[in-house]
Amino acid sequence: MNATIYRHEFRARLKSVIIWSLSLATLILFFLSMFPLFSDQAAMMNEFLARYPAQLRAAFGFDKMDLSTVLGFYSFTLVFVELCLAIQAGNYGFGLVSIDENELTADFLLSKPVSRTQVLTSKLLAAFTSLLITDLVVWVSTILGFLLFRSGHDYDPSTLVLLLLSLVIFQLVFMSIGLVISLLVRRIRSVTPYGLGLAFGAYVINGFSGVFGDVKLELITPFKHLDPTFIVLHASYDAPLVLLDVVVILVAIGVSYWLYTRRDIPAVS
Amino acid sequence: MSIIEVNNLTKYYGKSRGIVDVSFSEEEGEIFGFIGPNGAGKSTTIRLLLSLIHPTSGIAQVFGKDVTTHGPEIRRDIGYLPSEVYYYEGMKVKELLKYSASFFEGDCTQRIKELSDIMELEQNRRISDLSYGNKKKVGIVQGLLHSPKLLFLDEPTAGLDPLMQRKFFDLIRQENARGVTVFFSSHILGEVQRLCNRVGIIREGKIVEISDIRTLQQNNYKKVNVTAEGLSPATFDLPGVTNLQVEDSTIHFFFKGDINTVLQMISSVQVTDLTIEEPTLEEIFMHYYE
Image (cartoon, rainbow over all chains, first blue to last red):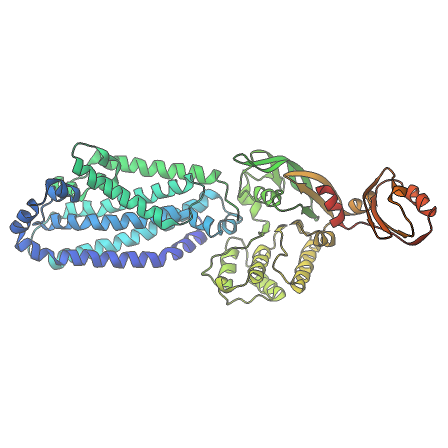
């Protein structure tokens, strides 16, 4: 770890962190502010949703969701939050080393007396700090939203903690996969398409898998592994799948170190 | 002790060639010129020595340490000026220099000021607003600010106006006088000629010649220009004569060997003008390319 690189990397992402955090806080508070309305007419709402085709409900995860409870409603909100976090974390992962190579500043950085391992560790920690700041904002706005809008409904605080903590694992999966992909290809010209592709791809696979019923395609996407509806329903994680995520994170980061220390930094062409 | 020691260094990018079987060494305090056309492998060699890329085979040592295993340690005493300078666009010049200095031990503030004054570099401008030549100046200050023991200059003068080039050369000579070893890559031979003690010529990834710059000029070829009435090229059909060209009544050629044989030939003709000179490095260099 090199404090200089860490500081520089963190600063480079600060603006993006602020924008994502504020957007997510707005999203969460906006959704939760509608909860009192929903909970008053929950029966009607659930009946209304029941009229949609089963496949469509499955695609959006409405089939197992109870919008009349505050946690059920929040888990509905959380799917959108997760989508945003996936894009953000994916972007950071894809950009972690590729931005330096694209803007051709990698030569500057790597001709300094630092090892590749130090560089990658500092960059990873800086990106992780950025993600944690976003998480903190999400957590605070969630708790604030619950305090303001739960309109007397009870909820299980430990389940809420599980939900909030699941976001960290969720982000790490997207960041580490983004990083390892960026190191497997020769050069990434622009980060955003990759980040969006990974996030929406994973989201759509989760949704569509529900539509087709028996196909177990969803088992490869973190949207399924850390499905908020499951967590709310069982008041626990889907342990084997969450373990799978942890393994994916560790393997992806391990492979990234292996690749990065052996990588030929592309020259100006 | 050799500062740089390279043995049979080979680099392939997949199937395309970088460099093949390159061997050379550079002694402490030398200014070593590394010349060759674009794509010959000059930058590849420098990037290998900086461990920005990894060799396919062969060994490269800097300060007596292997570059693949001791990279960070070696780079503490290396200054690098890349051929194309790219820096964090959003930063100001002084921020970038401060960031660069923070990787090294000791306080570089004084040195940054000195170098910036010499190169007339404005500290408060944003990198993105700088012209190519000004970015190059940032590169120069950035490469020298930690007082390195070894300098890699990869086509350093591109983008600098003649005045700045001269200041830059003076700066390099000063550094060299303090004992700094310089590895100077270029395709502009004039500047190599002005600055270097020894040169390596690289072509299509292979070293074709390494020699003292004086030996290269003196012991090899003479450039002979003879002007005379009714001169026929056949007169100089001797072993050792190359690149014979006829231009009106003047004949130019390169000669390698005992100069007396040429002089005897010339003395048999009534000449109006005669010069025998050292070929410029440029001319020698073109010769290696054919």
